[in-house]
Image (cartoon, rainbow, N blue to C red):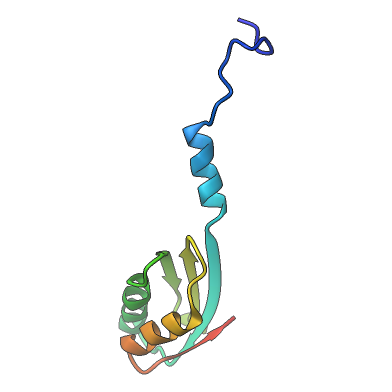
Length: 94
């Protein structure tokens, strides 16, 4: 079969659609202050993970870095509310 011959269908490839969707994922970075232990990290991660559209949350105690992966922009007010719900912490966009 000739690869350039027209015998192969050139319609949408489900795998290609998945790749495109992953490429559109967003990662937004924040700084969380007030965390003092691993439980703090756990509570912040848990609350932010519950926001609609959030796919993954990575929080580090040292430096207070938080990376939020989502499929669309998340309102900063939603991030603030979730972090405040987790405890007496403050959050800023990095």
